[in-house]
Length: 130
Image (tube, rainbow, N blue to C red):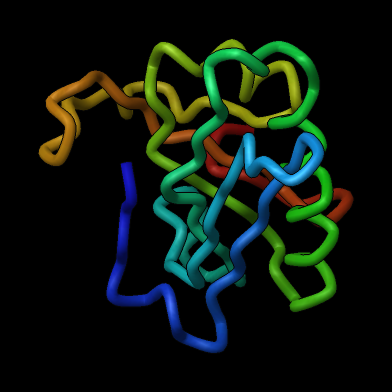
């Protein structure tokens, strides 16, 4: 399945992928976006993260996110956020993301349950949930 977003070719968009040999097995895209958690902070929204089923739970997703977070810090991002699919919340929590309590919703695009999640990229940052 190929997903395209009108922002994909913008110079501020960040696309990250993980490979097993020559095969792309995980991808994630980040767009500058106002965070619903701390609207005044420089933030990027994670969209379209996907990992091939046959390599899930092997660390590819965690490595892609860690790499992306370093790249985004270098671009001045203070926070990343996403509408995380509820079935993947355990993964995001395990790699240091937090849930915004009461933000559960049904995605209009996928009709699947999602929750707003975020991760601070700077030390000592105050958050909306602290």
